Length: 158
Ligand code: 4NP
Image (cartoon, rainbow, N blue to C red; front, side, top):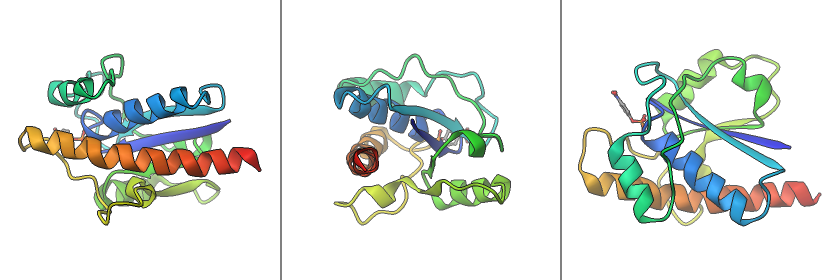
């Protein structure tokens, strides 16, 4: 089993988008029994909330349903559960490094390391911007999801 956790600040915009898009890729690849997907926020402001309605609407336009997701906060125990912990931006990553136990043997990094056709390293926070920010998040997340799935497929084939 390979377990993947996506992390942003609030767990209502970027990481639920990554969660829904990557889960869709995993399902389509027939790997749902081998790859587990989750998401969390470094902050607790939105714990228990559904994704932002703007994220849900942008995702729905591309065929992804984010409505079952609920926000939770990332915790130290996530490092015992997940093989990949993927942050949306450098701020999320440095917050995660602060709770990362020394014994963590998985991969902690930026999600866009896997978006090979983009030079961007961060998924920009769309919360205070317009609708185009939400569709840009989807562009980046779709590209990174393909790259991540390709890497995990290679690992599973070994
Ligand atoms: P996210 O976006 O980290 O992509 O979920 C945000 C959501 C909420 C806030 C900031 C960013 N906020 O400040 O409440």
